[in-house]
View 1 (spheres, rainbow, N blue to C red):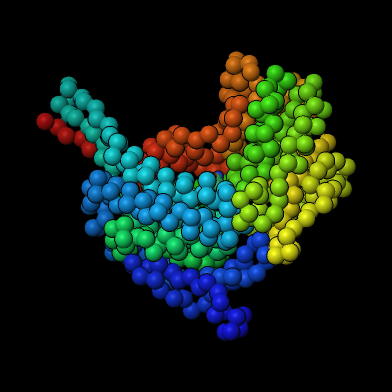
View 2: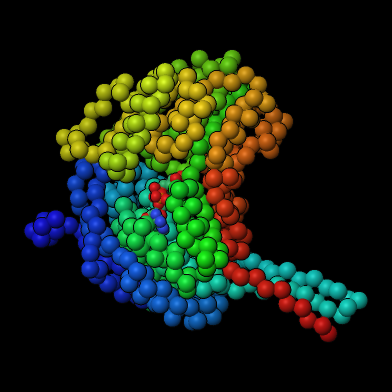
Length: 489
Ligand code: NAD
């Protein structure tokens, strides 16, 4: 990029020790709905990570010795400040990520605000354990303390939402952090840094280094003074992080991909099930780890379901994300769009039927969005279970619908992938719902609904979908070190 060109661009800076610091080199960041470069993101490496870890280490003694109530008040203040700027954050998230302004306004930013309020509150309610051994004259109790500098690495699909889901519990527990958002969606994290001082977050408690996974991410993963890493992203990256952090025996929390099934029995209430399953397939362009991508429908209602499901999917409007009437925005990048399209091509080559969307229906885009990374919600039927479309995470607006006959059969087929993040079950038979929920290899099971979350309860995946859980108690346990103390009286 030329100097003249760069003038108009938004240029981000790292946030280290309470100060914005420029970087020696930068990465281009695209607006997915236009295909234009509009922002430059620091291309940080070892040096920047080193400075950030040092700032976090220096800030730890003071921050960790504050009372939970003091930290809680600061988190609440930060929540208020983000909420005050909600519209600006939502506009920025939509522009940076390609998601619709409606989704950013109603899901991403409100949830980021809630993450801070939630942990501001929950940190006040933990109690530790105590047992007595009268015969020995002993009392045992546990004490929990923050671990130190937490390394936080987040993906591009729900940028501020997922980053704050890590920052909030980490600092509520008294840790200091070095966070690295995805290089493709860094803007809202940078905007949040501008509010930290006003909220009362001391310098060095939250440091943000921007850059790629290979350079900035790996420097953080390998840093000897970062004893715990909380990562959300792909299974492949998690394997690399596990390998690279192994020499240091780091504590890891890994929230990874999914290949989430929806199981629809013939006694399901289709008037609820169909719009919810369209939403669970295509919300945020299908770029949510919890999105449904394999729909198993009991044979007796299969053709009716398919007809109604496709009709409902066709109602979803794809186009300019800043238009509030649009349901499907742009995918994150040109490469990702190509990858998602290739899955549809592969399915067709294998003999599956594409019922709507990619390659079947016309995609009409406004003049300003012709170069954006758009794709219509796509429904594929008659896909074999062993097809890559039924086995691999596509992470786009593509869902597969297949028929099944029995409960036993569908449980086996639903479990027949390497992932185990989320599943949905639709039936009005309570006994069956419980039976199936227990048999599914999945960290989360929603029955007759989707994405209804109580942040108090564990969130996370089985198998290749992750290690560890997040939630009020789970995040508290992850971000603190426990000690058992015995007193003889
Ligand atoms: P990704 O793994 O490519 O990147 C995630 C983050 O890791 C980014 O910040 C990236 O820069 C960084 N990174 C990449 N390589 C690294 C390395 N070698 N060392 C350290 N950091 C590295 O994932 P993505 O494409 O950004 O996100 C999509 C994936 O995230 C999907 O698989 C999706 O299912 C998953 N996801 C999971 C959850 C969950 O809670 N389980 C939530 C959202 C997304």
